Length: 561
Figure 1 (cartoon, helix red, strand yellow):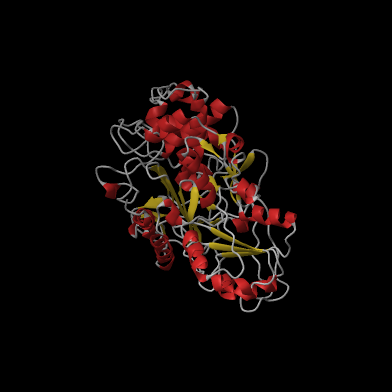
Figure 2: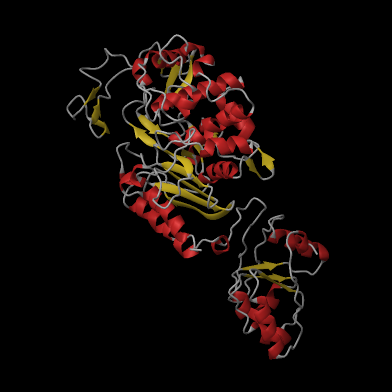
Protein backbone atom coordinates (compact mmCIF):
# COMPACT_ATOMS: atom_id res chain seq x y z
CA UNK A 1 0.00 0.00 0.00
CA UNK A 2 2.81 2.42 0.90
CA UNK A 3 4.85 1.56 -2.22
CA UNK A 4 1.85 2.26 -4.45
CA UNK A 5 1.90 5.88 -3.27
CA UNK A 6 5.20 6.32 -5.13
CA UNK A 7 4.89 4.14 -8.22
CA UNK A 8 2.57 1.88 -10.17
CA UNK A 9 3.37 -1.73 -9.41
CA UNK A 10 2.28 -5.27 -10.26
CA UNK A 11 2.00 -7.74 -7.42
CA UNK A 12 2.91 -11.44 -7.58
CA UNK A 13 2.63 -14.04 -4.83
CA UNK A 14 5.10 -16.89 -4.42
CA UNK A 15 3.45 -19.87 -2.74
CA UNK A 16 5.18 -22.65 -0.82
CA UNK A 17 6.15 -25.82 -2.73
CA UNK A 18 5.03 -24.55 -6.16
CA UNK A 19 5.61 -27.03 -9.03
CA UNK A 20 8.64 -26.16 -11.22
CA UNK A 21 6.39 -25.29 -14.17
CA UNK A 22 4.58 -22.64 -12.09
CA UNK A 23 7.93 -21.39 -10.74
CA UNK A 24 9.29 -20.99 -14.28
CA UNK A 25 6.18 -19.12 -15.49
CA UNK A 26 6.57 -16.72 -12.56
CA UNK A 27 10.28 -16.21 -13.32
CA UNK A 28 9.40 -15.54 -16.98
CA UNK A 29 6.70 -13.02 -15.98
CA UNK A 30 9.12 -11.17 -13.67
CA UNK A 31 11.76 -10.90 -16.42
CA UNK A 32 9.61 -8.26 -18.16
CA UNK A 33 10.02 -5.76 -15.27
CA UNK A 34 12.75 -3.14 -14.75
CA UNK A 35 12.75 -3.49 -10.94
CA UNK A 36 11.82 -6.44 -8.75
CA UNK A 37 11.15 -6.20 -5.00
CA UNK A 38 11.03 -9.43 -3.01
CA UNK A 39 9.28 -8.89 0.33
CA UNK A 40 10.03 -11.79 2.71
CA UNK A 41 7.80 -12.18 5.73
CA UNK A 42 8.10 -15.91 6.46
CA UNK A 43 10.86 -17.33 8.62
CA UNK A 44 10.97 -20.86 7.14
CA UNK A 45 12.05 -20.64 3.52
CA UNK A 46 12.87 -24.30 2.71
CA UNK A 47 9.62 -24.72 0.76
CA UNK A 48 10.58 -21.71 -1.49
CA UNK A 49 14.15 -22.74 -2.23
CA UNK A 50 13.32 -24.40 -5.56
CA UNK A 51 12.11 -21.04 -6.91
CA UNK A 52 15.11 -19.03 -5.65
CA UNK A 53 17.65 -21.65 -6.80
CA UNK A 54 17.13 -20.49 -10.41
CA UNK A 55 16.11 -16.87 -9.72
CA UNK A 56 18.94 -14.65 -11.04
CA UNK A 57 17.16 -12.06 -13.24
CA UNK A 58 18.97 -9.37 -15.26
CA UNK A 59 16.88 -6.60 -13.69
CA UNK A 60 17.94 -5.19 -10.29
CA UNK A 61 16.36 -7.14 -7.41
CA UNK A 62 15.83 -5.72 -3.91
CA UNK A 63 15.18 -8.11 -1.03
CA UNK A 64 13.21 -6.79 1.96
CA UNK A 65 13.42 -9.05 5.04
CA UNK A 66 10.69 -8.42 7.61
CA UNK A 67 12.23 -11.25 9.64
CA UNK A 68 15.39 -11.78 11.71
CA UNK A 69 18.46 -11.40 9.51
CA UNK A 70 19.73 -14.97 9.77
CA UNK A 71 16.65 -16.19 7.84
CA UNK A 72 18.16 -14.84 4.61
CA UNK A 73 20.88 -17.54 4.81
CA UNK A 74 18.23 -20.08 3.72
CA UNK A 75 18.18 -18.46 0.23
CA UNK A 76 21.81 -17.28 0.36
CA UNK A 77 22.62 -17.76 -3.34
CA UNK A 78 19.72 -15.55 -4.52
CA UNK A 79 20.43 -12.84 -1.89
CA UNK A 80 24.10 -12.78 -2.96
CA UNK A 81 22.92 -11.62 -6.42
CA UNK A 82 20.68 -8.84 -5.05
CA UNK A 83 21.36 -5.23 -5.96
CA UNK A 84 20.18 -4.19 -2.47
CA UNK A 85 19.00 -5.83 0.74
CA UNK A 86 16.93 -4.10 3.43
CA UNK A 87 16.73 -5.79 6.82
CA UNK A 88 13.57 -4.67 8.60
CA UNK A 89 13.62 -7.35 11.36
CA UNK A 90 9.84 -7.17 11.92
CA UNK A 91 6.57 -7.45 9.97
CA UNK A 92 5.07 -4.59 12.02
CA UNK A 93 3.07 -2.21 9.75
CA UNK A 94 5.12 0.83 10.83
CA UNK A 95 8.33 -0.97 9.82
CA UNK A 96 6.79 -1.87 6.45
CA UNK A 97 5.88 1.77 5.81
CA UNK A 98 9.36 2.91 6.87
CA UNK A 99 11.03 0.41 4.51
CA UNK A 100 8.84 1.54 1.59
CA UNK A 101 9.79 5.16 2.36
CA UNK A 102 13.50 4.24 2.46
CA UNK A 103 13.23 2.67 -1.01
CA UNK A 104 11.88 5.94 -2.44
CA UNK A 105 14.30 8.27 -0.63
CA UNK A 106 11.62 9.57 1.76
CA UNK A 107 13.18 8.14 4.94
CA UNK A 108 16.57 7.30 6.41
CA UNK A 109 18.25 3.97 7.08
CA UNK A 110 21.45 3.96 9.15
CA UNK A 111 21.54 0.55 10.85
CA UNK A 112 24.63 -1.66 11.03
CA UNK A 113 24.81 -5.39 11.68
CA UNK A 114 25.80 -6.32 15.23
CA UNK A 115 26.76 -9.83 14.05
CA UNK A 116 27.78 -11.22 10.68
CA UNK A 117 25.30 -13.05 8.42
CA UNK A 118 27.31 -16.01 7.16
CA UNK A 119 29.40 -15.05 4.14
CA UNK A 120 26.76 -12.58 2.93
CA UNK A 121 27.49 -9.61 5.23
CA UNK A 122 30.20 -9.02 7.86
CA UNK A 123 29.68 -7.47 11.31
CA UNK A 124 29.17 -3.71 10.99
CA UNK A 125 27.82 -3.92 7.43
CA UNK A 126 25.17 -1.32 6.61
CA UNK A 127 24.92 1.61 4.22
CA UNK A 128 23.60 4.91 5.58
CA UNK A 129 21.13 6.57 3.22
CA UNK A 130 18.92 9.62 3.81
CA UNK A 131 16.54 11.68 1.65
CA UNK A 132 19.61 13.84 0.86
CA UNK A 133 21.70 10.94 -0.46
CA UNK A 134 22.25 11.59 -4.22
CA UNK A 135 19.95 9.47 -6.35
CA UNK A 136 21.43 7.01 -8.83
CA UNK A 137 19.82 6.01 -12.10
CA UNK A 138 20.43 3.23 -14.61
CA UNK A 139 21.87 4.93 -17.73
CA UNK A 140 20.47 2.27 -20.07
CA UNK A 141 16.94 3.31 -19.10
CA UNK A 142 17.70 6.80 -20.43
CA UNK A 143 19.35 5.72 -23.68
CA UNK A 144 22.95 5.73 -22.43
CA UNK A 145 25.44 2.87 -22.22
CA UNK A 146 27.07 2.40 -18.78
CA UNK A 147 30.07 0.77 -20.46
CA UNK A 148 30.69 3.83 -22.65
CA UNK A 149 30.19 6.20 -19.70
CA UNK A 150 32.96 4.32 -17.86
CA UNK A 151 35.36 5.76 -20.47
CA UNK A 152 34.98 9.08 -18.63
CA UNK A 153 36.94 7.56 -15.72
CA UNK A 154 39.92 6.67 -17.90
CA UNK A 155 39.93 10.08 -19.68
CA UNK A 156 39.70 12.00 -16.37
CA UNK A 157 42.40 9.85 -14.73
CA UNK A 158 44.59 10.20 -17.83
CA UNK A 159 44.43 13.97 -17.27
CA UNK A 160 45.62 13.52 -13.67
CA UNK A 161 48.38 11.12 -14.76
CA UNK A 162 49.67 13.44 -17.48
CA UNK A 163 49.62 16.49 -15.22
CA UNK A 164 46.78 18.34 -16.94
CA UNK A 165 45.34 19.06 -13.46
CA UNK A 166 45.77 17.60 -9.95
CA UNK A 167 42.07 16.65 -9.72
CA UNK A 168 38.62 17.22 -11.19
CA UNK A 169 34.87 16.65 -10.85
CA UNK A 170 32.56 15.38 -13.62
CA UNK A 171 28.76 15.35 -13.57
CA UNK A 172 26.44 14.21 -16.38
CA UNK A 173 22.65 14.59 -16.23
CA UNK A 174 20.16 13.09 -18.70
CA UNK A 175 16.47 13.97 -18.53
CA UNK A 176 17.22 15.67 -15.22
CA UNK A 177 18.71 12.54 -13.62
CA UNK A 178 22.31 11.92 -12.55
CA UNK A 179 23.97 9.46 -14.94
CA UNK A 180 27.54 10.15 -13.81
CA UNK A 181 28.88 11.96 -10.74
CA UNK A 182 32.50 11.38 -9.77
CA UNK A 183 35.53 13.18 -8.39
CA UNK A 184 39.10 12.26 -9.41
CA UNK A 185 42.59 13.03 -8.13
CA UNK A 186 43.67 15.38 -5.36
CA UNK A 187 43.71 19.10 -4.47
CA UNK A 188 47.33 19.78 -5.43
CA UNK A 189 49.03 16.45 -6.11
CA UNK A 190 50.61 13.69 -4.05
CA UNK A 191 50.00 13.95 -0.31
CA UNK A 192 47.17 16.50 -0.60
CA UNK A 193 43.47 15.81 0.17
CA UNK A 194 41.43 13.76 -2.31
CA UNK A 195 38.88 15.68 -4.33
CA UNK A 196 35.33 14.94 -3.11
CA UNK A 197 32.02 15.79 -4.77
CA UNK A 198 31.65 18.58 -2.20
CA UNK A 199 35.10 20.14 -2.88
CA UNK A 200 34.67 23.74 -4.05
CA UNK A 201 36.35 25.07 -7.22
CA UNK A 202 37.06 28.55 -8.63
CA UNK A 203 34.79 28.62 -11.72
CA UNK A 204 36.73 31.47 -13.44
CA UNK A 205 34.79 32.60 -16.57
CA UNK A 206 32.14 29.94 -16.01
CA UNK A 207 31.00 32.58 -13.46
CA UNK A 208 29.79 34.64 -16.42
CA UNK A 209 26.90 32.27 -17.21
CA UNK A 210 26.46 30.61 -13.78
CA UNK A 211 26.33 33.99 -12.03
CA UNK A 212 26.18 37.31 -13.88
CA UNK A 213 24.05 36.08 -16.80
CA UNK A 214 21.45 34.53 -14.45
CA UNK A 215 21.03 37.92 -12.77
CA UNK A 216 20.81 39.65 -16.17
CA UNK A 217 18.14 37.18 -17.32
CA UNK A 218 16.15 37.71 -14.10
CA UNK A 219 16.24 41.50 -14.48
CA UNK A 220 15.28 41.16 -18.17
CA UNK A 221 12.34 39.01 -17.03
CA UNK A 222 11.27 41.81 -14.72
CA UNK A 223 11.37 44.33 -17.57
CA UNK A 224 14.19 46.41 -16.02
CA UNK A 225 15.98 46.84 -19.36
CA UNK A 226 15.83 46.04 -23.09
CA UNK A 227 18.65 44.34 -24.98
CA UNK A 228 18.84 47.38 -27.28
CA UNK A 229 19.35 49.75 -24.32
CA UNK A 230 22.62 51.67 -24.25
CA UNK A 231 24.51 50.52 -21.18
CA UNK A 232 25.51 54.16 -20.54
CA UNK A 233 21.82 54.89 -19.81
CA UNK A 234 22.26 52.76 -16.69
CA UNK A 235 25.98 53.42 -15.96
CA UNK A 236 26.44 57.22 -16.05
CA UNK A 237 30.28 57.06 -15.90
CA UNK A 238 30.21 55.87 -19.54
CA UNK A 239 28.01 58.70 -20.83
CA UNK A 240 30.71 61.13 -21.94
CA UNK A 241 32.97 58.48 -23.42
CA UNK A 242 33.30 56.68 -26.76
CA UNK A 243 31.29 53.85 -25.10
CA UNK A 244 28.09 55.84 -24.71
CA UNK A 245 26.32 54.04 -27.60
CA UNK A 246 27.28 50.43 -26.75
CA UNK A 247 24.15 48.29 -26.31
CA UNK A 248 23.67 45.53 -23.74
CA UNK A 249 23.12 43.07 -26.59
CA UNK A 250 26.50 43.95 -28.16
CA UNK A 251 28.22 43.24 -24.83
CA UNK A 252 26.44 39.87 -24.46
CA UNK A 253 27.56 38.92 -27.98
CA UNK A 254 31.16 40.11 -27.25
CA UNK A 255 31.04 42.49 -30.24
CA UNK A 256 30.92 45.89 -28.53
CA UNK A 257 34.44 47.03 -29.44
CA UNK A 258 35.50 46.84 -25.78
CA UNK A 259 39.00 45.47 -25.13
CA UNK A 260 39.40 41.83 -24.15
CA UNK A 261 40.82 42.75 -20.74
CA UNK A 262 42.49 45.60 -18.86
CA UNK A 263 45.31 44.98 -16.32
CA UNK A 264 43.71 47.16 -13.59
CA UNK A 265 46.17 45.86 -10.98
CA UNK A 266 49.03 47.74 -12.68
CA UNK A 267 47.51 50.99 -11.40
CA UNK A 268 48.17 49.74 -7.84
CA UNK A 269 51.86 48.95 -8.53
CA UNK A 270 54.50 51.58 -7.73
CA UNK A 271 56.39 52.08 -11.02
CA UNK A 272 59.47 53.39 -9.15
CA UNK A 273 59.77 50.25 -7.01
CA UNK A 274 61.39 47.97 -9.62
CA UNK A 275 64.20 48.13 -12.17
CA UNK A 276 63.48 48.26 -15.89
CA UNK A 277 60.12 47.08 -17.19
CA UNK A 278 57.51 44.99 -15.37
CA UNK A 279 57.20 42.52 -18.27
CA UNK A 280 59.52 41.15 -20.91
CA UNK A 281 59.13 38.98 -24.01
CA UNK A 282 61.98 36.77 -22.79
CA UNK A 283 63.41 35.46 -19.55
CA UNK A 284 66.33 37.39 -17.99
CA UNK A 285 67.71 38.31 -14.56
CA UNK A 286 64.96 40.87 -13.94
CA UNK A 287 62.15 38.73 -15.41
CA UNK A 288 62.42 35.17 -14.01
CA UNK A 289 58.66 34.43 -13.81
CA UNK A 290 56.82 33.01 -16.79
CA UNK A 291 53.22 34.23 -17.17
CA UNK A 292 52.49 33.13 -20.73
CA UNK A 293 54.02 31.77 -23.94
CA UNK A 294 56.04 34.95 -24.56
CA UNK A 295 55.52 36.82 -21.31
CA UNK A 296 57.94 36.98 -18.39
CA UNK A 297 57.50 39.14 -15.28
CA UNK A 298 59.52 40.93 -12.61
CA UNK A 299 58.05 40.01 -9.19
CA UNK A 300 60.26 42.49 -7.29
CA UNK A 301 57.83 45.39 -7.10
CA UNK A 302 55.89 47.16 -4.36
CA UNK A 303 52.28 48.28 -4.29
CA UNK A 304 51.36 51.95 -3.88
CA UNK A 305 50.49 52.61 -0.24
CA UNK A 306 47.56 54.77 -1.48
CA UNK A 307 45.85 51.60 -2.68
CA UNK A 308 47.25 48.51 -0.94
CA UNK A 309 47.90 47.65 2.71
CA UNK A 310 49.13 44.47 4.39
CA UNK A 311 46.50 44.88 7.11
CA UNK A 312 42.77 45.67 7.17
CA UNK A 313 42.45 49.26 8.33
CA UNK A 314 40.37 52.37 7.59
CA UNK A 315 39.36 52.31 3.93
CA UNK A 316 41.54 49.26 3.18
CA UNK A 317 38.65 46.80 3.46
CA UNK A 318 38.71 44.94 0.11
CA UNK A 319 40.62 41.68 0.66
CA UNK A 320 42.51 40.43 -2.42
CA UNK A 321 44.39 37.56 -0.69
CA UNK A 322 45.39 36.44 2.80
CA UNK A 323 47.93 39.21 3.26
CA UNK A 324 46.72 42.15 1.10
CA UNK A 325 43.91 44.66 1.48
CA UNK A 326 42.80 47.12 -1.18
CA UNK A 327 41.48 50.64 -0.61
CA UNK A 328 37.76 50.88 -1.43
CA UNK A 329 38.61 53.87 -3.68
CA UNK A 330 40.15 51.47 -6.23
CA UNK A 331 36.67 50.83 -7.64
CA UNK A 332 36.83 54.36 -9.10
CA UNK A 333 40.19 53.54 -10.71
CA UNK A 334 38.59 50.54 -12.46
CA UNK A 335 35.75 52.72 -13.76
CA UNK A 336 38.24 55.34 -15.01
CA UNK A 337 40.37 52.74 -16.80
CA UNK A 338 37.29 51.32 -18.57
CA UNK A 339 36.13 54.82 -19.52
CA UNK A 340 39.60 55.69 -20.92
CA UNK A 341 40.23 52.44 -22.82
CA UNK A 342 39.98 53.16 -26.57
CA UNK A 343 36.98 51.54 -28.25
CA UNK A 344 37.80 49.39 -31.27
CA UNK A 345 35.63 48.33 -34.22
CA UNK A 346 32.54 46.25 -33.47
CA UNK A 347 33.73 42.78 -34.35
CA UNK A 348 33.80 39.60 -32.25
CA UNK A 349 36.40 39.90 -29.47
CA UNK A 350 35.78 37.91 -26.28
CA UNK A 351 35.74 40.54 -23.53
CA UNK A 352 36.04 40.27 -19.75
CA UNK A 353 35.57 44.03 -19.60
CA UNK A 354 32.08 43.71 -21.09
CA UNK A 355 31.01 41.29 -18.36
CA UNK A 356 32.52 43.51 -15.65
CA UNK A 357 30.15 46.22 -16.95
CA UNK A 358 27.25 43.73 -16.89
CA UNK A 359 28.03 43.01 -13.23
CA UNK A 360 27.86 46.77 -12.53
CA UNK A 361 24.58 46.90 -14.47
CA UNK A 362 23.10 44.18 -12.22
CA UNK A 363 24.09 46.15 -9.09
CA UNK A 364 22.50 49.27 -10.51
CA UNK A 365 19.22 47.64 -11.58
CA UNK A 366 18.85 45.30 -8.59
CA UNK A 367 19.75 48.01 -6.09
CA UNK A 368 22.05 45.62 -4.20
CA UNK A 369 25.36 43.78 -4.69
CA UNK A 370 25.10 41.14 -7.45
CA UNK A 371 26.18 38.32 -5.09
CA UNK A 372 23.32 39.19 -2.69
CA UNK A 373 20.84 39.28 -5.57
CA UNK A 374 21.99 35.89 -6.94
CA UNK A 375 21.93 34.30 -3.49
CA UNK A 376 18.40 35.57 -2.87
CA UNK A 377 16.91 34.82 -6.30
CA UNK A 378 18.69 31.58 -7.21
CA UNK A 379 21.32 29.88 -5.07
CA UNK A 380 19.48 29.82 -1.71
CA UNK A 381 16.01 28.78 -2.93
CA UNK A 382 17.61 26.19 -5.26
CA UNK A 383 19.48 24.65 -2.31
CA UNK A 384 22.94 25.31 -3.81
CA UNK A 385 24.81 25.09 -0.52
CA UNK A 386 28.32 25.20 -2.04
CA UNK A 387 27.82 28.06 -4.51
CA UNK A 388 28.73 31.70 -3.98
CA UNK A 389 31.27 34.50 -4.17
CA UNK A 390 33.95 35.04 -1.47
CA UNK A 391 33.65 31.44 -0.22
CA UNK A 392 35.94 31.93 2.78
CA UNK A 393 33.12 33.82 4.49
CA UNK A 394 31.16 30.53 4.68
CA UNK A 395 33.61 27.65 4.24
CA UNK A 396 36.83 26.43 5.79
CA UNK A 397 39.87 26.76 3.54
CA UNK A 398 40.20 22.96 3.58
CA UNK A 399 36.87 22.66 1.68
CA UNK A 400 38.14 24.82 -1.22
CA UNK A 401 40.53 23.51 -3.88
CA UNK A 402 43.58 25.81 -4.38
CA UNK A 403 43.52 27.33 -7.87
CA UNK A 404 47.07 28.61 -8.35
CA UNK A 405 50.46 29.48 -6.84
CA UNK A 406 50.52 33.20 -7.61
CA UNK A 407 54.25 33.96 -7.46
CA UNK A 408 53.91 37.27 -9.31
CA UNK A 409 51.08 39.46 -8.02
CA UNK A 410 49.85 38.19 -4.65
CA UNK A 411 52.82 35.95 -3.87
CA UNK A 412 50.86 33.16 -2.19
CA UNK A 413 48.76 30.06 -2.90
CA UNK A 414 45.27 31.19 -3.90
CA UNK A 415 42.76 29.09 -1.97
CA UNK A 416 39.33 30.68 -1.70
CA UNK A 417 40.44 33.92 -3.37
CA UNK A 418 39.56 34.35 -7.04
CA UNK A 419 42.44 33.72 -9.42
CA UNK A 420 41.33 36.29 -12.03
CA UNK A 421 43.23 39.52 -11.30
CA UNK A 422 40.50 41.88 -12.57
CA UNK A 423 37.89 40.26 -10.34
CA UNK A 424 40.35 40.16 -7.41
CA UNK A 425 40.90 43.93 -7.63
CA UNK A 426 37.13 44.31 -7.76
CA UNK A 427 36.95 42.52 -4.40
CA UNK A 428 36.23 39.09 -5.93
CA UNK A 429 32.77 40.26 -6.99
CA UNK A 430 33.21 41.30 -10.63
CA UNK A 431 30.87 40.22 -13.42
CA UNK A 432 33.58 38.31 -15.31
CA UNK A 433 34.78 35.87 -12.59
CA UNK A 434 34.68 35.16 -8.85
CA UNK A 435 32.03 32.47 -8.41
CA UNK A 436 33.00 29.26 -6.56
CA UNK A 437 30.98 26.04 -6.68
CA UNK A 438 30.89 22.26 -7.11
CA UNK A 439 30.05 20.33 -10.29
CA UNK A 440 26.80 19.10 -8.67
CA UNK A 441 25.61 22.63 -7.89
CA UNK A 442 26.62 23.94 -11.32
CA UNK A 443 24.72 21.07 -12.99
CA UNK A 444 21.54 22.08 -11.14
CA UNK A 445 21.81 25.64 -12.48
CA UNK A 446 22.06 24.38 -16.07
CA UNK A 447 19.30 21.81 -15.53
CA UNK A 448 17.07 24.69 -14.43
CA UNK A 449 17.90 26.52 -17.69
CA UNK A 450 17.30 23.33 -19.71
CA UNK A 451 13.89 23.00 -17.99
CA UNK A 452 13.00 26.48 -19.26
CA UNK A 453 13.64 28.30 -15.97
CA UNK A 454 12.09 25.84 -13.52
CA UNK A 455 13.36 23.07 -11.23
CA UNK A 456 11.74 20.99 -8.46
CA UNK A 457 8.39 22.64 -9.14
CA UNK A 458 9.69 26.18 -8.56
CA UNK A 459 10.08 28.78 -11.32
CA UNK A 460 13.15 31.05 -11.41
CA UNK A 461 13.01 32.46 -14.96
CA UNK A 462 10.28 32.64 -17.58
CA UNK A 463 10.28 30.11 -20.42
CA UNK A 464 10.40 32.97 -22.94
CA UNK A 465 13.54 34.53 -21.41
CA UNK A 466 15.31 31.14 -21.26
CA UNK A 467 14.35 30.46 -24.87
CA UNK A 468 15.63 33.85 -26.03
CA UNK A 469 18.97 33.80 -24.21
CA UNK A 470 19.81 30.15 -24.95
CA UNK A 471 18.85 30.06 -28.65
CA UNK A 472 19.81 33.47 -30.10
CA UNK A 473 23.16 33.46 -31.90
CA UNK A 474 25.24 36.34 -33.22
CA UNK A 475 25.31 36.86 -36.98
CA UNK A 476 29.11 37.29 -36.96
CA UNK A 477 30.32 34.66 -34.46
CA UNK A 478 29.35 31.43 -32.67
CA UNK A 479 28.40 33.37 -29.50
CA UNK A 480 24.91 33.46 -28.02
CA UNK A 481 23.50 36.07 -25.62
CA UNK A 482 26.23 35.55 -23.00
CA UNK A 483 26.53 31.83 -23.75
CA UNK A 484 29.23 30.12 -25.77
CA UNK A 485 28.19 27.61 -28.46
CA UNK A 486 29.83 25.05 -30.74
CA UNK A 487 31.47 26.48 -33.88
CA UNK A 488 29.27 25.20 -36.71
CA UNK A 489 31.80 26.21 -39.42
CA UNK A 490 34.87 24.75 -37.75
CA UNK A 491 34.27 22.43 -34.75
CA UNK A 492 38.00 22.54 -33.91
CA UNK A 493 37.71 26.27 -33.15
CA UNK A 494 34.95 25.83 -30.56
CA UNK A 495 35.13 24.35 -27.08
CA UNK A 496 32.83 21.36 -27.68
CA UNK A 497 33.21 17.81 -28.94
CA UNK A 498 32.58 17.46 -32.70
CA UNK A 499 29.45 15.39 -31.92
CA UNK A 500 27.79 18.26 -30.02
CA UNK A 501 24.81 19.64 -31.98
CA UNK A 502 24.60 23.35 -32.88
CA UNK A 503 21.87 23.89 -30.25
CA UNK A 504 24.31 23.26 -27.36
CA UNK A 505 25.03 26.25 -25.07
CA UNK A 506 27.27 26.81 -22.04
CA UNK A 507 30.69 28.27 -21.18
CA UNK A 508 34.27 27.45 -20.17
CA UNK A 509 36.62 28.91 -17.55
CA UNK A 510 40.37 29.65 -17.47
CA UNK A 511 40.93 27.51 -14.35
CA UNK A 512 39.84 24.44 -16.38
CA UNK A 513 36.06 24.40 -16.08
CA UNK A 514 33.07 24.00 -18.40
CA UNK A 515 29.31 23.43 -18.41
CA UNK A 516 27.34 22.45 -21.52
CA UNK A 517 23.61 21.97 -22.07
CA UNK A 518 22.26 19.95 -25.00
CA UNK A 519 18.51 20.71 -25.27
CA UNK A 520 18.02 18.21 -28.14
CA UNK A 521 19.20 15.25 -26.06
CA UNK A 522 18.29 16.71 -22.64
CA UNK A 523 21.92 16.47 -21.49
CA UNK A 524 23.86 18.55 -18.97
CA UNK A 525 27.64 18.05 -18.70
CA UNK A 526 29.88 19.78 -16.12
CA UNK A 527 33.66 19.49 -15.70
CA UNK A 528 35.57 21.38 -12.97
CA UNK A 529 39.33 21.32 -12.37
CA UNK A 530 42.22 23.49 -11.19
CA UNK A 531 44.43 23.01 -14.26
CA UNK A 532 46.45 26.18 -13.45
CA UNK A 533 47.75 24.70 -10.18
CA UNK A 534 50.53 25.30 -9.58
CA UNK A 535 51.31 27.09 -12.85
CA UNK A 536 49.16 29.28 -15.16
CA UNK A 537 51.22 28.24 -18.17
CA UNK A 538 50.03 24.60 -17.97
CA UNK A 539 48.10 24.04 -21.21
CA UNK A 540 47.84 20.24 -21.10
CA UNK A 541 44.08 20.28 -20.46
CA UNK A 542 43.62 21.98 -23.83
CA UNK A 543 46.37 20.04 -25.61
CA UNK A 544 44.91 16.69 -24.50
CA UNK A 545 41.33 17.91 -25.24
CA UNK A 546 40.18 16.34 -21.96
CA UNK A 547 36.90 18.30 -21.68
CA UNK A 548 35.98 17.66 -25.30
CA UNK A 549 36.90 13.94 -25.09
CA UNK A 550 34.69 13.47 -22.03
CA UNK A 551 31.84 15.19 -23.87
CA UNK A 552 32.53 12.94 -26.86
CA UNK A 553 32.33 9.86 -24.59
CA UNK A 554 28.86 11.00 -23.45
CA UNK A 555 27.68 11.16 -27.07
CA UNK A 556 29.27 7.78 -27.79
CA UNK A 557 27.30 6.39 -24.84
CA UNK A 558 24.01 7.42 -26.41
CA UNK A 559 22.56 4.35 -28.07
CA UNK A 560 21.90 4.70 -31.77
CA UNK A 561 18.17 4.78 -32.38
